[in-house]
Amino acid sequence: MIAGPRERGIGMTSQRTRERLVRRLGDEGIRDARVLNVMRHIPRHLFVDEALASRAYEDTALPIGHGQTISQPYIVARMTEALLRGGHEPRSVLEVGTGCGYQTAVLAALVPKVFTIERVRALYSMANERFRELKLYNIRQRLGDGYKGWEGEAPFDGILLTAAPPQVPQGLLDQLAVGGRLVAPVGETGHQVLRVIDRTDSGFEVREENRVSFVPMKEGLE
Ligand code: SAH
Image (cartoon, rainbow, N blue to C red; front, side, top):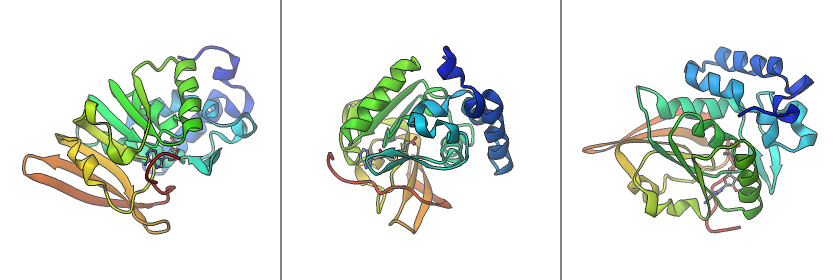
């Protein structure tokens, strides 16, 4: 996957800088070695504007235009870990909110098939270019409203939201396979928590975890 000098990175985007980020994620409590390893290798600086590349391995959210952000690495790691925890090995995952595509790329390194939906056309196109550049062929993208999910490909073993709805949309719970798990930030801005929902034979098991801060999930196309 890693090829030319831009991908390899120099100085502030070098392997050493990435190692520092991964160490920090470990210090913050990320334990899943698979997740840490993937984050060590995915060039996050390619997912942000070149002017921000030198800050790509800081543990912080960064602007990606259109009022949206690339999620903080800790949150990407935390949500991915939550999706896989307890021996879960999803074969297919639906992500709502492609944004710049960084979380999508992390998922694509760990899950055989990743479906991702974005409502802003410009972000959809930018992510598309990056997936091609990085040869991530197990990602399928759609421009659309994530509230509706992706009917034709459901059910999914995993669903991950990277924008926060006020409540978990029932339409998405319906597209979760029995034995599957949904991970989502839920709530109004300033009062969001990370929710992990497992679908069992008899219904849904809901857990509330960290307090988080995501952009709101909006309805319809931009
Ligand atoms: N996954 C990104 C985070 C992007 S921010 C990362 O790795 O950094 C959240 C994204 O969700 C934004 O791009 C926003 O446009 C998108 N979004 C918000 N509501 C949506 C909806 N209903 N359907 C699809 N995408 C949505």
